[in-house]
Length: 99
Image (cartoon, rainbow, N blue to C red; front, side, top):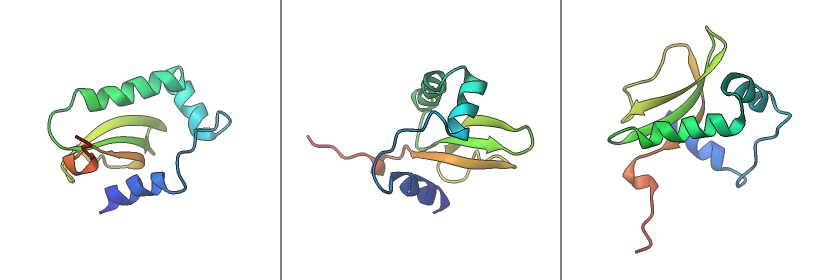
């Protein structure tokens, strides 16, 4: 349920571009070199995983770093001390086929 709360919370009020002046944008740029570099890596989490689950961006409170990680199904892969910032539902129910 919590993964869905993060996921749907990010969809509220429609799409919003990440503000380049925001702390998150700055942290992504500092750590990954650019926002696009982070996005490429995040999308790589999706492209390299097999099965159903969640692509996540989280903040590691212990190391003060951002992490891209995979949560298999709903329960395998949650990291201790990591606060989820973005959850992308990669289960088949998240897709709509128009064919």
